[in-house]
Length: 324
Image (cartoon, rainbow, N blue to C red; front, side, top):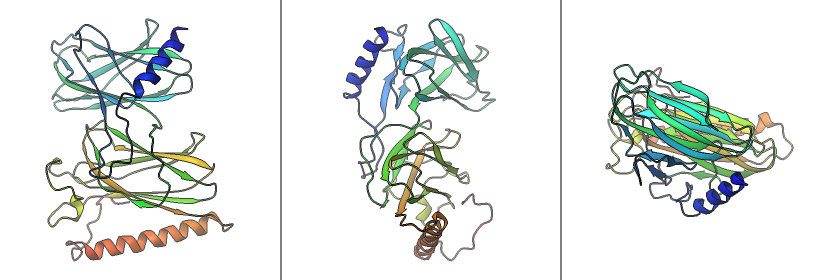
């Protein structure tokens, strides 16, 4: 009865929280709901919902422990990301259910910063408590805790091929979720482009049955951190901008229905902007390889057209740029 009551509360509250959708196309930054530390009482555990990240959280003393809680349901795949936002802080995450710890992990930031990622499938309904502290209890500082369901749920379904406007990952632990409708046998191509230095875009795609269909990423050369106050354009197309990277996911739909894909920063250590191009080729009985060959030709022509229009088109390609 207790779990059933918690499920009702979560479903009711979810309607009050801004949802992450792909509908906002004017700087399509998917809205992130926030869990504020210290509200209403610093000693009270903070409620977390999926798609939510913490704000205003810090360890004021080296032995501080902050506590969050959230409900889980059997079969749910969850991902927790804990990033230290102060140099030298080694964030530690302990997960507890029913008073019993079942996960204890941390990352070593050295003199810099680091992100801990933990993913698991909940075996049963329950309530998890997440305890955040510094490994070794010898540092203080700020941190961000992010909670995601993988794959994530959004409202809008992409029902046609599209070239997205800029999307934004912010904070560094952010994960943006999208979904598209497709029929079995269709060949799907998603080209993911980084638009800011430091952002190493990572795309994962799943079928309606939860099967992983694609997992691709690329590495962008280091450069200045993103300035979200600049004109909203992909910086890879600006004169003098660094050579950024792109990654292409190609897969055949195995089950008719809603396919989902998510975008994050590889390593969850840098915010930034990205965009994607989605193409679908209907399967009409031809071999899947033939459909993918058509997609490859379309992608090659698109890349050539963009290169010809780019101010940097006359520059020689640089080996090891991370483009895939």
